[in-house]
Image 1 (cartoon, rainbow, N blue to C red):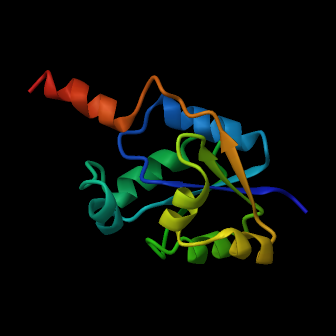
Image 2: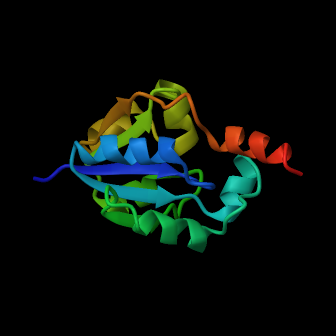
Length: 140
């Protein structure tokens, strides 16, 4: 069975840290990127600058990304994870364990029951969407 690597996020203001994440994911198998809807992003973060459709179109053009889907369940990522047929969920090591699982709407037992493994890769500390937004403020 092929490895199907589920990566989720908002991916607003795409940057090289995101590309590194996808590149690392690709080393494990087929990469499925699940994109958070605008309303969900606004509830837990801030209103995205780019629309869901704009973010999805950008992600579809990245050579390390095989499929782009919508995180249909918002806080309950299980819906999209199952739909994607993921064998692994990959995330940066800046957010791990119980708090990550709680945010995504599942627990350790659900992973075991669905034969899905969590993978963590090094977080790219040098760049973030927040950092880009801070830089933009200097130009306004």
